[in-house]
Image (cartoon, rainbow, N blue to C red):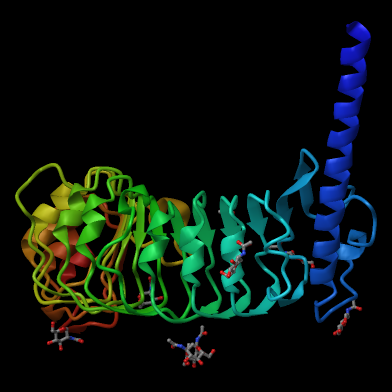
Length: 370
Ligand SMILES: *[C@@H]1O[C@H](CO)[C@@H](O)[C@H](O)[C@H]1NC(C)=O
Ligand SMILES: *[C@@H]1O[C@H](CO)[C@@H](O)[C@H](O)[C@H]1NC(C)=O
Ligand SMILES: *[C@@H]1O[C@H](CO)[C@@H](O)[C@H](O)[C@H]1NC(C)=O
Ligand SMILES: *[C@@H]1O[C@H](CO)[C@@H](O)[C@H](O)[C@H]1NC(C)=O
Ligand SMILES: *[C@@H]1O[C@H](CO)[C@@H](O)[C@H](O)[C@H]1NC(C)=O
Ligand SMILES: *[C@@H]1O[C@H](CO)[C@@H](O)[C@H](O)[C@H]1NC(C)=O
Ligand SMILES: *[C@@H]1O[C@H](CO)[C@@H](O)[C@H](O)[C@H]1NC(C)=O
Ligand SMILES: CC(=O)N[C@H]1CO[C@H](CO)[C@@H](O)[C@@H]1O
C-alpha cells in the first residue's frame, strides 16, 4: 500500500513537472517572439531574454509562480517597439505588468482582453496612441490602470468603471466624461489631469464613496462647482484647476463637508464671485492647496504648507479674515480687481503673498510695511 502511493506520488510529480516545463517553454518562446519585433535589438537590459527551456530562469523582469509567468516588469528598460506582437494569449497567469518609461508606440491591441488574470497594468510614460480599448474594462480582476503621459485620444469609456485606480493624466482624451460607470463604487483614485475633456462633472461620482483622489485639472470642463463632492467621506485630493468652471460657489450649510480634504485646487477657473467663506470653514483638515507645482521652488517646505490658491473676483474682507491662518497666499492669475485691501497687510501668519497677474490697481497699502 505504501509502495503504491509512493509510485503514484512520483508519477504525479513527474507529470506536474512536465506540464510546468512545457508551459513555461511556450511562454518563454512567446516573449522572445515579442522581443524580436523591437526596433532596437541591442538592448543591454534584455540580453537575458534568449532561448532557454525555462522562461522563469534568470530572465530580466520576469517573475514566475508555479512555473507560469506571473509578473512582467521591464520599467525603464529602453524598449523601443509596439505591443502588436505581445503574447496576450500565451500568458494566461500574468497578473502584474509594468512596461512604463519605455519607447512603446502604436496602439493598445484589443487582445489585451485576453490577459484574463491581469490585476495591475502600467503603460505610463511611453508614446502609445489611439483609443483605450474597451476590452480593458472586461478584465474581471483588474484594479489599477496607469497609462499617463502617452498620446491616447478618443473618449473615456464607461467600461473603465471597474477599475479602482485610474491614472490617465497627460494624454489627449476628449469628449465628455461618461454619465455613469458600471461599478462606480469601486473607484478610489481618478486622475485625468491634462486632457481635453469637456462638458459636465458627472453626478455618478457622488456614489463613489471610496473616492480619495479626484483630479480633473487642465481640461475644458464647463460646469458649476459640484458642492456635493463635499459629501464624499474619503476625499483627500480635489483638483479642478484650469477648467471653465463658472458661477457662484454655494455651500449647502452642512458642517460635515470635505472632512478629509488635504489638497484643494480650484485655481484658474471662471467663478463669478468670491469663494464663500463658509467653504473655508469646511476645509479644516486642509494644509496644502496647490498640488500642481511639482516642487515648491523658492518656497521652502514649511512655507509651502498652509498655502491657499483660490480663484475668484473681488477680494472680500470676510474672506481675508479666514485667511489669517495661512502662511502663503497665492492669488495670482485671477481676475481680482480694485485696490489691495489694507487689512491684507495685517495678516498675522502671512509670509508670502502673490497677487501677480490680476486686474489690481493703486499702490501697496502702508499696513504691509508696519
Ligand atoms: C542601439 O541601436 C540603436 C539603433 O537601432 C542606436 O541608435 C543606439 O545607439 C544603439 N545603442 C547602443 C547602446 O548600441
Ligand atoms: C532610467 O534608466 C536610465 C539608464 O538607462 C537611468 O539613467 C535613469 O536614471 C533611469 N530613470 C529612472 C527614473 O529610473
Ligand atoms: C507607473 O509607472 C510610472 C512610470 O514608471 C511610475 O511613476 C508610477 O509610480 C507607476 N505607478 C505605480 C502605481 O507603480
Ligand atoms: C494631441 O492631439 C493634437 C491634435 O491631433 C496634437 O497636435 C498633439 O500633439 C497631441 N498631443 C499629445 C500629447 O499627444
Ligand atoms: C486619434 O489620433 C489618430 C492619430 O494618431 C487619429 O487618426 C484619430 O482620428 C484620432 N481620434 C480621435 C477620436 O481624436
Ligand atoms: C458652457 O456651457 C454653456 C451651456 O451649458 C454655454 O452657454 C457656454 O458658452 C459654455 N462656456 C464655455 C466657456 O464653453
Ligand atoms: C507669483 O505667481 C506668478 C503667476 O502664477 C508666478 O509666475 C510667480 O513665480 C509667483 N511668484 C512668487 C514669488 O510666488
Ligand atoms: C482566447 C481568447 O480569448 N482570444 C480572444 C483574444 O482577443 C481577441 C480580441 O478581443 C478576441 O477576438 C479573441 O477571442
